[in-house]
Length: 417
Ligand SMILES: Cc1cc2nc3c(=O)[nH]c(=O)nc-3n(C[C@H](O)[C@H](O)[C@H](O)COP(=O)(O)OP(=O)(O)OC[C@H]3O[C@@H](n4cnc5c(N)ncnc54)[C@H](O)[C@@H]3O)c2cc1C
Image (cartoon, rainbow, N blue to C red):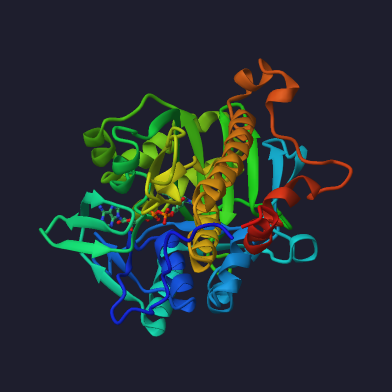
């Protein structure tokens, strides 16, 4: 039996808690899971509890399995739009294949597109019901000291807390990552998505048109995806190669819906009537831009004394092209909690995070190829076939099994953890 670094079970009269920084998807799922294992933890979130979170996320079977394990799937299932596939076609309606987001028969779950506010709201409610201690509007600042037995952490308001561990689930601009990899900043990947919502009834959809769909045209790829329970509202948008915006430029554009709609319509004349009808009817207050950033691979997600760990976007934010950021964050939240429940043996965290970064590297490669699928036609034509993501034509959906059948507990077992 290897040496145990920490025993988190509350055997002492007042055990030190694990501090979780960030009440996003990873932080909340991690807290819920630790609480189930009777491991004391506290969640600190910089934003107010009732902050308005915009947009929707696609959850795929790998993450829905995690949410099912936590008891959350049954509570959110009916709050989003369930679907299995995304049709890919040209703007002349020539089929290009099918992208599987889920399948009850193949992977155990359909895909679920759900508003982020609904999901976070439900996870916060569950954490509260379970008795998780959470503090909002409290911002993590820095690690003061770390030893084999202890970690001392400072917050922006000057509070200093002595803890068993510090877990950074503080997103792409993670401050906890700064401790592990000083100066590592997300890198712009040259593409920015521009999207928003449109009423389904305002789009010129042919009868029996299959949604969600990605439409490849001269100017790139345009996506239309239902995002509320009854499918009455669609996500509509595309991605462009544009130079990186400064923070001020990004803020200015994000607060100007008309400007974003104008950007979306940049190549309007090149699109089919169907896409043009979506572009014409965008709901202004739903518009957003999403520059694609990735966190460069950092040497380790774990500190020398294994007291600090980062997961989710903090460790590896990946671009939205294949919609896996939230899904991976949830896989990691469950994986880390199971590992900590076993006592944090020497070397286990390192072994697990190495496995996780290999999985993320595979997703980054898939993302790179899918981004090529979405280039303007002239650029697509200049690339070799091997540079595109391709569905399995003989056995549709087979190509996604490695991603969607991932079972966190089984993977840990397979790693000997
Ligand atoms: C528009 C949009 C659409 C997306 N769609 C999808 C999708 O369809 N499918 C998918 O899988 N992914 C999607 N993603 C990506 C997904 O949202 C992220 O990958 C996911 O939210 C990562 O979860 P996280 O918990 O790691 O980080 P986050 O959700 O970013 O949470 C981090 C939290 O930490 C808090 N925080 C930050 N700094 C501090 C600090 N110093 N102290 C305290 N708290 C702090 C933040 O306020 C935040 O609440 C989308 C992202 C965007 C922007």
